[in-house]
Image (cartoon, rainbow, N blue to C red):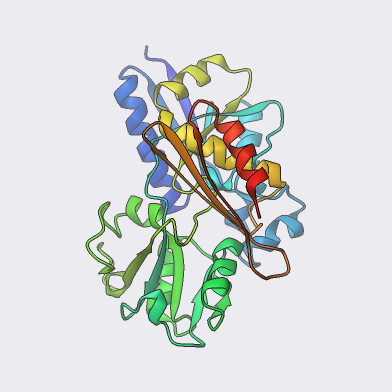
Amino acid sequence: MSETFTIGTRGSDLALAQAVSTEAALAAAFPDLQVVRNVIRTTGDRRTDVALSEVAKVEGVLDKGVFTKELEIALDAREIDLAVHSLKDVPTVLEDRFAIAAVLERAPIRDVLLTRDGTALENLPAGAVVGTSSVRRARQLQWLRPDLKIIDLRGNVPTRLRKLAEEGTYDAIMLAEAGLVRLGYLPLVSAGKVEPLAGEDAVIATLHAERLPEDVFYPAAGQGAIGFEIRADDARACDIAEMIGHRDTWLRVVAEREFLRLLDAGCHTPVGVYTAIEHGQLHLKARVFPEQGGDPKTGDLSACTSDPLHAAFLLFESLS
């Protein structure tokens, strides 16, 4: 009889796509392992009636825990062996009994501006309405284009795309490139500055996307990374997760998440952080926006890849 290993995931289209990627990696590394999927609804999935930045306050949940709490409960109850997360949704400080064991190779980390007519960010007219649930995206947009109007946008990825396509509320919306690629709306490689969406949904396929350069519009810490949370004392789950993990992605997200921890920043703090590994060096850039608006503090440095925690500390110390 084959060994069983249970993964937990949220039930959104994007979360299920990430679960499929995880299952494929597990099947390649452990052909005899029987992987079982447990779909779990989280607080963030349930509370779509309030802005994402307010869900934690309304529910009394640790910031960022709105998409992880129920998965951790399942881990604690041994209903699952591993929780599959969008890493950017995971708190930077976990309870001692949990740990992030590994991450898959990272998807593209850029943010994407979506419109009905293919207008680029720089060409949006003054007063154009842009929808996003991300405080980080909203603050960067306001900094780069103070003449735009930013309003809240909730729902899973297909729902948000249909809202843009079918409703007149938004002139544009912003989403993560990783999700659009994983769901098949964008190819992995960009086809131009502004490109049409793909897919079987004819309404969504009328939309256009502009991938914003990550060194211009800074992404969230952990954006594009699929992280694996386990019970800290589960050596078997740790070994399995590490076998399908990706080293360079791990080094980058460790630095990014440590930087957030040093800032005492959570999911709804307007912080953008960009990392890359080139020629054995870890390059880091950050923008930290004040809570009440204004210009961000910035940091930019390179450090050795052997110590991403120290690199994060140096970035934190360099903010000015």
